[in-house]
Length: 57
Image (cartoon, rainbow, N blue to C red):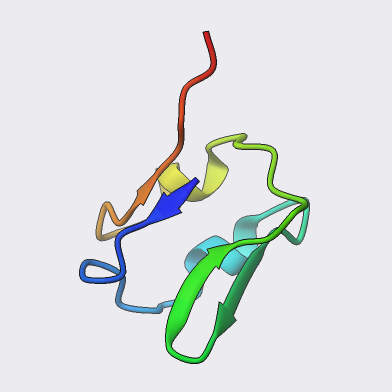
């Protein structure tokens, strides 16, 4: 999971929806921690399209 910090408005929607508590908002930036499974829930709820999840084949 990658967050485009230029698009992110730090609304916190991704942090609140993550079932793994894998997204951290610190020092003005948002990003995944080691618990991220690339499930894609955060990508679907981001109103700005700032989150992209790598699709596994």
